[in-house]
Length: 116
Length: 116
DNA sequence: ATTACATATGAACAGATGTTCATATGTTAA
DNA sequence: TTAACATATGAACATCTGTTCATATGTAAT
Image (cartoon, rainbow over all chains, first blue to last red):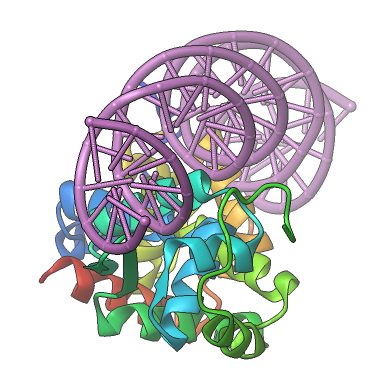
């Protein structure tokens, strides 16, 4: 057997070969999963949705969502690292906004799937 | 203060009111997060990508990805529950395929974001 | 400088998640 | 019916994740 972790035999070698060729390399798929992981939390999805309407500061986001400033800040950090949001500072206040057109578009596709 | 979990004050009430109106209700956003949660795992993303090329049986998927038959079966269950894949039985073998056009389209959008 | 406030960050803890292992179910062939 | 095999499922376990709490940083005003 090829793989010790797999308890079954290869059934359709031709299909597997064909699909294997069409598959992006592992790292790319890991990155892709990591991207969607960021979308896969209700707090972050809310933040992204809010920001698709208008830029907002941390404080207002926290109030609107009903979580602590700290929790929101932590999540904004995740969103920032994923390059989904950007920010600008205005005095003491930091305003966040979407960094990418894909964000709205991905959310939209997701909603279409939900609404079926 | 409105919310005991928020340690900061409302800064821009007008913006918050506007955004609050534009926001879908909580349940919908939860569902949306749950949907993306399904995409947010490398094993499941791989499975979805495989199936976007061609329908495959559990055994071949397990061999191709290099995980146990059990692990793949568990994940296919998750994908099934999210209505992202469907299956047909042919004798002992069960073939899975994508259930929805949105799947490929969401993955495509994600990849575009990655490739920037 | 000191105070006030908006935001960021580290540690810790509880709950969620993915894999494995063992085993059950379903189908075919002998 | 029995054996063989493809798939499904439940329990257990280790890891990952999101929130809170406490505190640090950054900025403006007094």
